[in-house]
Amino acid sequence: MFDTFLNGEFYRSAEAAVSVDDRGFLFGDGVYEVIRFYNGSFFELEPHLSRLARSAQKISLLLPYSLQKIEKVCYELLGKSKIKNGKLYMQITRGAAPRTHQFPVQAEPTIMMKVSAVNEDELKEKQKGATAITLPDDRWNHCDIKSINLLPNILAKQTARSQGYHEAIFVHSEKITEGASSNVFAVLHGKLVTAPASNRILAGITRSVVIELARAAGIEVEERFLAKDELYQASELFITSTIDEIIPILSIDENPLNGATVGRITGNLQELFQKKLSTLNKYS
Ligand code: PDD
Image 1 (cartoon, rainbow, N blue to C red):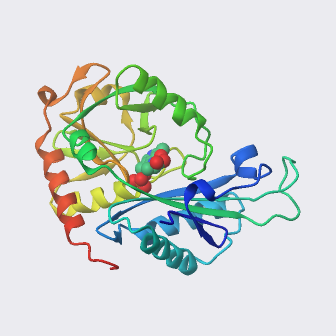
Image 2 (tube, helix red, strand yellow):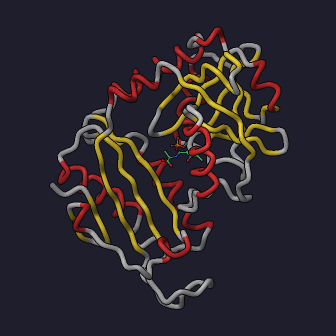
Image 3 (tube, protein in one colour):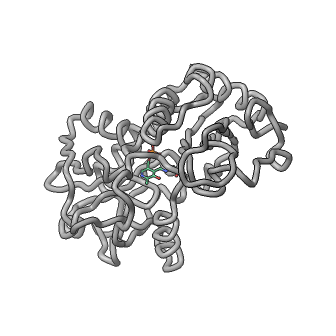
């Protein structure tokens, strides 16, 4: 079973190899996407590919293929893998070249995709609610780029997990930006509030879907930075990501929210999200 695509060929992942001179390995010089597929259909493939193109353009990385070709390869890989429900990880780096900080004069970008199954039971368990802590957002000023440089994110996530929390929520100048690998939403006075798309957050694809679902359901959405204090006053809190979909946050920094139960608006949005997923058709 082939689960990996690398520079034009399909592989079993253990047999795919990248050069030790690859700038992704040496410098983290690359961009990535994570895309879910359900019942053999990708979810929001087009917005993911558009964001990939924007990330690549922002680091002056020329994509090795057109987006149409990348889309075709995504489906080919899905077909070869025989996995029906899972995630596709895609990474494009500036390629292999002698190590210099400045861009190499000549290098072919490396394009890699790997599909893997998702454990739906584990996901459903997480979606009953999780906990989070706040941590300083010590990332750079281009968080809108989906860069493979994730050290601050992984260190924050590790701090959270090692203390028994699911997610780390970043605070920058007393404002909530996003999670280590998610976007953050709060319900305040009946309104849904989330950080605006800017250089301080990755504008999540799940975030956009949730905003759209909320507005269509008559829930008012405000895109503004929440003050850290407002987090504790929120009646509901949840995080969104491609991998986790919508996860209710039942306590933040050990402060329970909504009596540590899933709030009405969060539950409603989870249902609407599942409803949207159930309309996905094979190869739609
Ligand atoms: N991360 N913000 C950050 C920093 C993220 O890493 C992610 C997702 C999101 C949510 O974006 P989306 O809804 O498009 O997945 C927000 C992916 C899943 C990851 O790194 O695995």
